[in-house]
Length: 334
Ligand code: DP6
Image 1 (cartoon, rainbow, N blue to C red):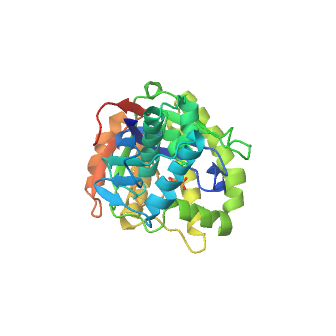
Image 2: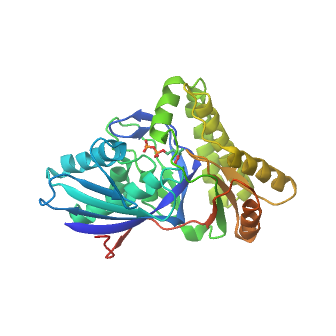
Image 3: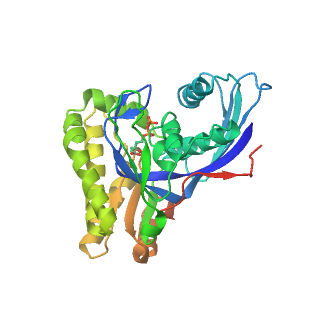
């Protein structure tokens, strides 16, 4: 009852920001993302009666009862697995990320997609990818999209039990192999407000929430899907950038405010706009953290990475492209 899996972080082109049902982790809106190639979680899980309590170790750090990660993230997820299987066996989970955790680089997405795949294998649940995306969702909403490779849509669904809320692949990585995201890491510190808490407050208090969910997102989903189909980089970049700014406008207007940007974030936002005016085609997107992901095509990626490195306040630059979904591996972490 031991298995290991890898999964990659995904970066949203149309953001998920707000739940309509906390228990089933159902979103207020659909969303669209790109699964990356280079931001990977590697997770091993073992279910064994020898464990008296669940054991959770992420990037070498052990989490215990009372820690949010243990109780509210992995604890809730294992509760779902136990309810599903009717087996109350404790588990040991060891997970390593090759990128900064909890700083707006979708570590929970990669982590829970990998964990769902490993649990499926360890307990021989026989879930297909659609069912796996529904299981991963119960750990972290955005994890539902990291199950699949390439460009992915998370369907909002209508049902209250979440039975029509899952992710599916729109296009495999080979559809647009030249597409790149250059990630400017402006801080490796854990963010102060987790996406989960921030989006909950936004739904409750942001004066812009309703128009975001009802008007902005549905239009952006259609525009992004069309741009992906046609490989229209300009429309895709413009729409994704506007979508990110609208999400952050909703977040910033939340009470208390949810402001993820730092000085480095602002530098890159303005730089991208300037570079575009000079003819270097690129657009930015930002998730629940201070990192800026610059969308561009392969031919410009190295130049953009070089320019980003010239700024103060930049801790790291990572170039990534459309990548793979969950993979089972024999490489166990313990
Ligand atoms: C800003 O999936 O981390 O990155 O479902 O509460 O675990 P929970 O939240 P999470 O939120 C991600 C928010 C986002 C946008 C996105 O990835 O779509």
